[in-house]
Length: 395
Ligand code: GLA
Image (cartoon, rainbow, N blue to C red):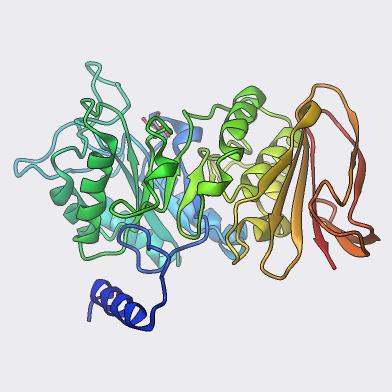
């Protein structure tokens, strides 16, 4: 029995039992926690250094740096992997200079490390990168079934599907066509929609007929504090639309790329984690500095993102540019992030009532210092400019 048939049989059984299953991600039978992994775009864009040697090296680093053990799973490649033209039969083909061994061999290498492999395309006539003659690489619009078959035949586990050159065709129609094609491809392929929030995907992309695993909620991030802050503010208010297997995606991480301070990268990672965002590393792991790696490997913070209850943190206050976000955890505890967006330090006093908790005696775990203390659930702290503190508060 194929996985897809098993999924259908399970669905029927659950229907008989009156259990309502969370809709699975496109071709996936089990709804997943936010995806963790790597994507080359923020680090290389389309530069020549983006090639199979780099991606194999990244997979090696996942293992040797402990990222795989920390939960990072996907090694994904972005725009510019493809050749300028489809082959004579209309199939996508890789750029022979960047990926001379082919995509299937690259996927096999990544799988041999116990990792998963992701690819990129666009729900348009061509992709976004206008390198040559002001046009991108071949897009998936009108080729959905054929391209999904190629992805499955190459053992692809994940598709990031962009929005460029979409010919103004209805977004739901375009993303449904690819979601259907992935479901019919015979392989489980995680569907990551990159529609930039243009058509409020949080209202429709998680449900049938699309059932995407995640959808971008904003335009592209850049490696600056201002960009990170803007995107955070757009995404944090969308918590009610996220659910198990269907996540808001405020774009990939910039941690390690050098445009922000370590304090700002710590905020970036804290906020993305508590917003149940996909955690896709966007820096070249072959060159990462120890401080940035330490941020990405913070298991206390990752545990907030990957908590099995699967609830995106809710912003309970943003008065004076102090953002307080609370997230219920499966074991009954609450994760809290307090972020100071201001350029000046602030004395912050968050009461237990502000957090929506009852007065009492709590264990407060500081998720960046990794220390436990007894407390009454309130948080009193002098927060440096752009800094975030995170706690896990348990009875
Ligand atoms: C768009 C996407 C980015 C990246 C580029 C590639 O801008 O939003 O994440 O994939 O295209 O060209």
